[in-house]
Amino acid sequence: MNLQAIFCPNPGCLDKYEVGKGNIISHGRKRQRCKCTCCGKTFAYRRGAPFYGLRSEVNEIICVVTLVAYGCPIPAIVAAFERDERTIGEWLQRAGDHAELFHHQQMRPLDLQQVQVDELWLRMQQQVMWVAMAVAVGSRLWLGAVCRPKRDKKLAEQILTCVYNWAKPVALVIAFDGWNVYFDLCLKIFSEPFYSGRKGRPAMKIWEQLTLVQVVKHTRANTWAGIRQVLWGSCTRFQRLIERTQGAGGINTAYIERLNATFRGHLSILVRRSRCPACCARREFVPPACSFTPVRSRRSSAVSRPRDH
Image 1 (cartoon, one colour):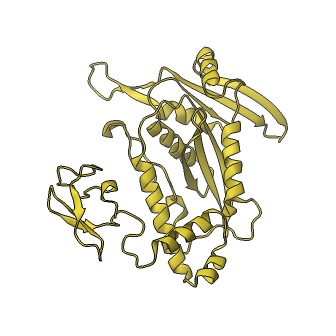
Image 2 (spheres, helix red, strand yellow):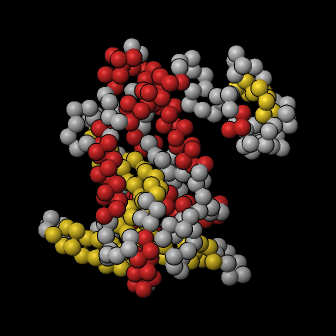
Image 3 (cartoon, helix red, strand yellow):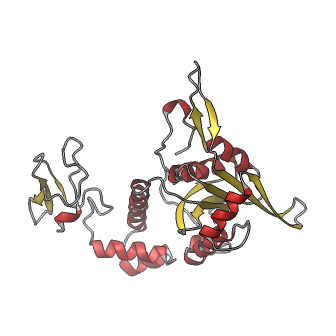
């Protein structure tokens, strides 16, 4: 057991969530339990991990999750490891929940400079699911994804809220395609309350250094348009951020489209024509609840935005 890599999960402990302080000691090697010398509480070594409460081998679970991530079909894994399909589904659900929590814990405001947003769709059993994703161009940081059964306003609102939770209130460029819903929602989400000293609800003030750009590739008649325009903000600031993040070029969404192509190439369920469409064996699965939008927000309760989780 690596006791220097874990922390005390007791909320009442003075050293809670502190890693490497030397307050964690072994409390049994057969059952792999730990003890905090600060509060005296004991807990399982695997607590908080996706392997907690499972009797299967850790290497086997890691191998199964890795095979699924690289596109191996579930029936092949069931036949090779001689495991029940429901067991494999539970391992995948645990791994996904743990990855989502880790993603939320690592979230902190960053200087994103330029963000590109786009959507893709995947074929599920008896339905189609839309996935919206965002990426920071300068660092190639994947900011997250949101899944919904329809390409509606809620989909755009959730992914932009994810970008807002990542971004610092500094110079920022958001690039998107010809879907006009993004422009209105950006002005709504990227705004802060302006307190003037008067009574009543404060007015919302849009970020001063926010720049919104749009790439319209096709018109409604499905003809090539190729329109690139700055919808909001300063063109000079936009050009400066473009030089910092991608070196040269103009308004584009090439980086998020390249990321979408990477996901389609490595995940079999995202392929447009696939023999194994995405599905979920859990009965409580509801498509609108399949969301990876962070639940935390820096906004106060008076100006919070409604979100679906």
